[in-house]
Length: 191
Ligand code: SIN
Image (cartoon, rainbow, N blue to C red; front, side, top):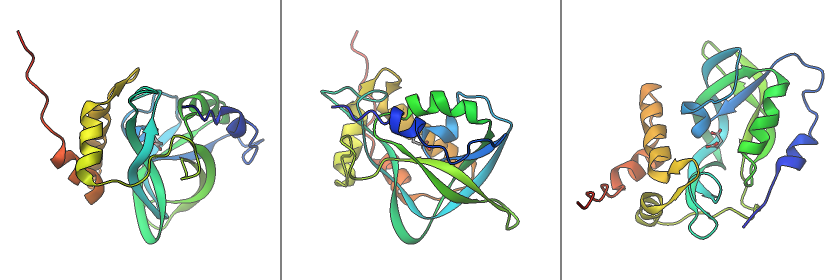
C-alpha cells in the first residue's frame, strides 16, 4: 500500500520566503530529529491527541505486515505536547520524504512556555489516507507493534523511545504509556 504525499507537501508554499519556521514533532520527531535545526524547544498544540492509528509500511513495518506509528486525531479541548524545532525551509525536503506514507503538512499554532506562541507546521496523517489503520483495542495495537519491523527498525523501539522521550519531557500520555505497559516482552533468543 502506498500513499506517497511527498509531491503534495512540496507543492505547499505557506512559508515561502521566510528564513526560518517552526516545526512541531509529536512522534519520532521528538526523539529522532535527523535534520539540522537552529533551536529546539518543548511546545504544545491545542485540539489534538496522539494516537498509534497510522500504519507504517516504510519505516516500522512492511507492506505485508505494517507497523503502527503516531498520528494526531482531533479532540476538542485536548492538548498535545511535543518538541518544536526552528528550521530553515530547506530542511522540509527530506522531511517530506521521511513522512511520505500519508502525512500532510498542516499549519497550526504552537505554544511555548510563558504564553509565547508562533505559527508553525506539523505533519499529520488523517483518516482519509490509504495507510490509516484507525482505532483498535490496546491489546491489538500493542500486539501489532510488538511484531512489526521495517527498514527503520523494530516498531517496538518507536513506541519505547517515544514513551521515554515523553517521560523526559514530563508529559503524561495515557495512550502511549498504556501501549508501553501492554507491549509483550521480547522473546528470548534461541541458541
Ligand atoms: C512526528 O513525529 O511529528 C510525525 C510522526 C512521526 O514521524 O513519527
